[in-house]
Image (cartoon, rainbow, N blue to C red; front, side, top):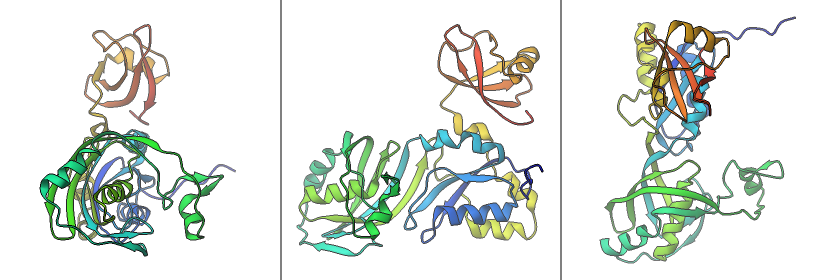
Length: 305
């Protein structure tokens, strides 16, 4: 017997969801998938339940580009509660230490933040999805087990102080993939001498996407009642996730051979790297890579293109 076909519509595109705080990224994904009655959907790196903000939902053929969004840099707006450390590094964890908070000047805060700009190393938190001997670290942490973790290099492209109060600061962070914002805040707190945890977290950008055009779950629920076509118009083109790569236009013959899995020679193509592939009618075909001999090889092609 053949494999049973999944139920749902063939929906292709990327929805920029404004994930609400208080639910998991997977719960948000399942709600969107249900509202669209989409056959296939996935998100691009989980946001903690505490966090809100930009969560690209890739549907249908767009799931083929989700890995590239996983690797993209991220941007966050973070409220840091000073003077209190928690087990999880955020407001949802048990308080493990409290210390007095000095009256920090802006110059003092900037001096500490400067230490975390550029290339730094982080020790991943125990409350993370990394694995140790096949077990998720957060599961071990819930059992009271702590294991040694090796530092990992990350890049903090920008770290900006945007507000401060008696016992809190607010920062904007632009960072590479794999950065733990909770760890960054904890490390900043230790350098200040008072400890800290994340009290509010909002993701403001993923790769080429920012908060422009974010869609909420309540807005989708309202549209679902009357206008499914309007919901579909909210989806961004698949290639919008790949704007960091140049586009290459193929002749009809070149497109035909490329879709058979054969590398093709394209005049005036880049000399290296990945490219977006288009037919002359601007139909997006997928992603390709320039070979050493200058030909363009297909890497991930869109079904039905």
